[in-house]
Length: 138
Image 1 (cartoon, rainbow, N blue to C red):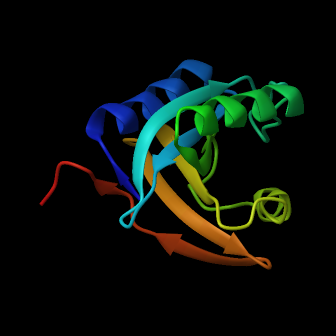
Image 2 (cartoon, helix red, strand yellow):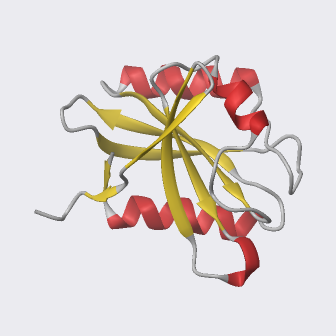
């Protein structure tokens, strides 16, 4: 996914603001190729937990409707890992089964290291990392 620095900074800011709990939200994309992030939509982690996230289904559906009304589409679901590496947990993998073709962006904040943002496609339980590239880069 191509994502501008300001949108990437929005993901990182959201993760830092919600720490020690996980944050969550979605990224709308413009039609591609290449897939290009258009907007970031924060969601509330109703689980309010440092170990997992849960999005209110009604809020998520409303956000997706707004994205599609604006001519974009759901491209990614994002959340943070505040205690572990930015790699999908088994819970993430199980949840992804309901969202085929959607990228899973994870902002890693573990151990006070600089934030590490990774993205994955998860299909049939198989996890494949995909590049998160600066939209301004040539």
